[in-house]
Length: 221
Image (cartoon, rainbow, N blue to C red):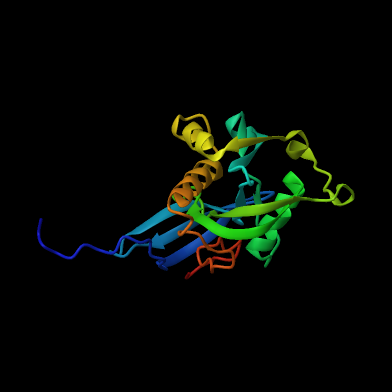
């Protein structure tokens, strides 16, 4: 021990110089960008980045303390995964809370009276700028039958399950659930409940880490 004051343990946003940036692949949802970055010590490195629009999801908790999970096929990992309702932030300028409320209605036929921010994280910061905000929703009501969204593609076959929060937490810790929104959201919800929900943030809490959207971060930034 040197007696030095330890640094504050909190992530810090910064803007190292990007000497050059080019899009090497333009995809249907996200791009791949190759950046040349000047590090703080002057060294220059080249990194490829998945330029992602970001996403939101919601841990839905009913009055029996059960979490809603949806079984959905995820082709890149060749697996059916159990996940909370979630979706991309692929509408330019859309408010994150409105986006997640839409996803809850479309994927689960539910609306909620009470919304809070549960946890924020980057999905894979070593190679992607995807930021994910996970909300907590309570006070649930069904969407009227005539107003329900017609699901398509992988979403057509989604199977819902209501799982007690403690059981869902144990499934995460046992390695039975792997989707990052499921893992982070369920563990955060269990911890927040154990703390009397004091850690919850208002639904409109600013989100400076939100993904900038593809093509919006270029040279010199």
